[in-house]
Length: 338
Image (cartoon, rainbow, N blue to C red; front, top):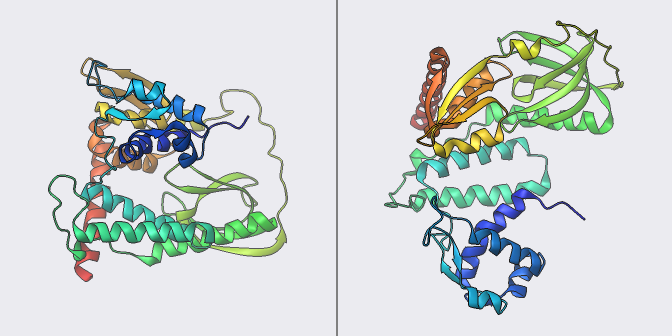
């Protein structure tokens, strides 16, 4: 039996109440047909929603379906808790999503299957922002000059690198890379690609570096150029390491940060492995996270955004603030030019 995708189930749970609100009294069989699942799955979804809602779990705190209709094989909402309305984006959320979609569209420029969906979604968000309908409070108008500026340079280069890396993996061929490290040190090297991976923020090429004679990871946004060579890629075997305290120093050398998050930041704790975590009486979370490097931790702090209460060490918070100011200044400059 195929494993149910958690993301598919979540999307269905969020969409089901709004669809039932538009189709009150609809049969469970019809709902199953609409969502492409079995009636048993819809019944399980309803049972899940029945115990979902606001903290407290008292009457009026939970999503409620009409029990009489449900027993008769029909669906009707009794207490939707706002789930009967389509999800609305604030202006800031819509802009952030649009910027992410533009980067993703450049990265997947050679993926025909993704192009149509990404293009239509970008257009819908752009129209929404321009019409001022993205703010769920006062629907303020958003001038087109305030929309994110497309900057083809960096993202287009990354898209070209991604295309070359994909061809190298597909055809099992060696690559010549011009790479800039996290310390801004440039280098050139030949590598035999192994795989592509992503941590949700960056795509990384894992490859055997012929110069280092070891497996190395290369973030795609730091690859200045990638040239496909005629030489076939070779499958290498990493040398066995001797057991002892020097076997893997990377874990001990990785920087750590202590974050204090609002209750709304629980998603971060669930998505990122934490060294330790504790919940305080007021529901806030104190977590210790370990990053690949300093830049990764700065990115994590920025992604936490409004969910963040405090950051330690203090210099990490200062670095994150400086990075945010540079990004804002860059955005403002681009807007003025437009």
